[in-house]
Length: 152
Image 1 (cartoon, rainbow, N blue to C red):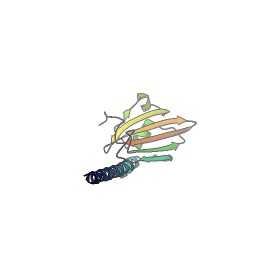
Image 2: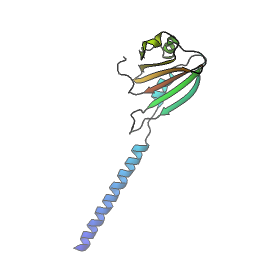
Image 3: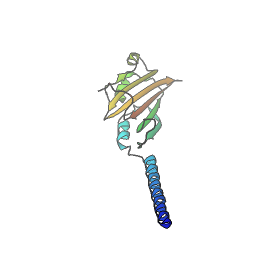
Image 4: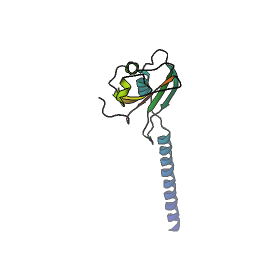
């Protein structure tokens, strides 16, 4: 009778080990899986920089099963420009999308510090403009959600 209990105990231990290894494999897969960024990169690339803008940075955060900060997928691009940028430049850059202005002063003069948000092809975007040391920086963030919900 005791040898029968040993066999059953061995089966239980073996079954538990198989279950734990399977769960560990699923966890490793879930944490390492990265999705496709083709769609979000296409949206980011649909914004055309104006003449003279020099790309300074590009970062792509791939979609994952577990997005701890909630910002994936996301694309960030930035450009530098030696001249000032105005509201018409941003409208042209955004393809004349409906923009939500963070500050109405951003419509009137050269832009020193302004942000604009909008939606395109199911993604939300934010455009940051800042001017410092005679250089204008234009940044573009595109993500699935989290920026603005009141732009059509």
